[in-house]
Image (tube, rainbow over all chains, first blue to last red; front, top):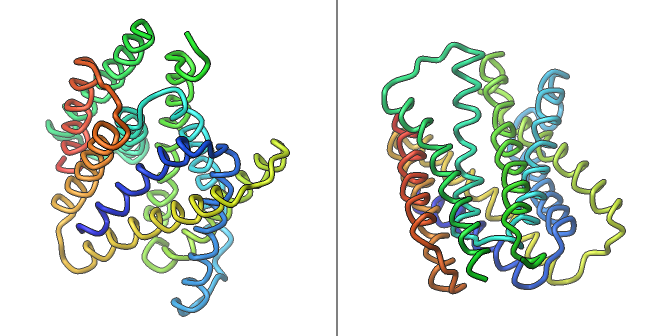
Length: 140
Length: 147
């Protein structure tokens, strides 16, 4: 669990480092995608019984959602150039609310008080982060 | 207002990243509802990353850029971190650690780590609105994991 925390934390720090080193978002996104793909391909090939052969529906579901995640990384890497990593990383992580809302709307998942309160806090937090960004802009 | 620090551009790009990143994991939920997630989770990830790679390769080709050495190293490291983060979280869950413990700690902890690095390592200055937004945002994410 601690290693998971450190890995995700390092990922955020590397996004900022890539910006500091003048990394160009399309190149960073492509290299991130190809390295992940190669590693997963190796795992599926040697670490699973069935290998990469799957029912068509699995690939048909996976590919568009993978494209969406790649769009997110590209936009995020481009956005870090215009803001702080401390707030930008939070902004992208707040997107965890979207699959939660989608599950509630599409699959009628129950909504407890804690979840409802957490979902209500997301737009408030985003608004505050944007206000902070605007304030920085006025200062500079 | 400089091009490098533009609040409107930051908000637009973060909203795109926010929505697209939020949609990204939902495929796994669909797979679960179809009853295929247990058998094909690793293969699903393979095709998920393949979709991401096709888009990223097209975007790179369209930009006409050639990756530099530093970008190759950083991109590879980032890919490794992304995959390790998913794998270690999955391992913690597979070893009996409950989700309501694993998710708040990995999400909240990594946010705290990145915020600390931003403030201390990269000397970023976050104002009172930003700090309040960060506290509420971390609370929201921990709340989502617990709920």
